[in-house]
Length: 165
Image (cartoon, rainbow, N blue to C red; front, side):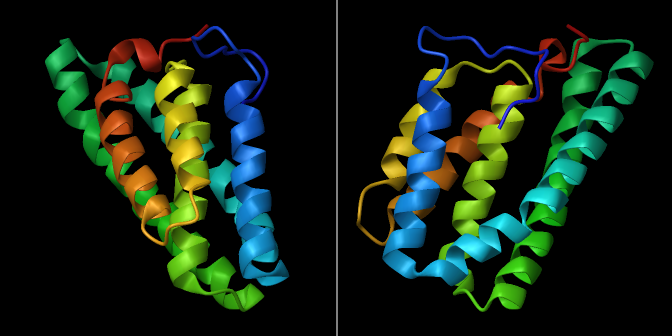
């Protein structure tokens, strides 16, 4: 989830990573190997989308004159990155033969967790959302995605999330 170099805040550094692995493993166990294949196929587009988002956000940060200006420009970048990744995850689910209603929200949840942890966000909200995804209720993953989406828009629209370590 996190490339070495930038460390997210929190007391238990491996908790979010273990919860992400548990959420993906539990979902693949419950919904079959096609879901695991869909998540695996979404890894490369997720990495490329996250790298593109980070580069464009840093470029926007360098060109911003005020923090409000940066925040106003960072939110559409995040929305675009999410749309791009959602399209890639939908394609990965179709290629793997997994149910899109299950695979895409879980892939988006893991993508948001990766973005937040990579950009130094605190682990507690990420870990809470990943733990919520482990609940066997059908709406749990959707609720986790919604919660993490709100947190991502708040955390990733700050300039400090994109400053070089």
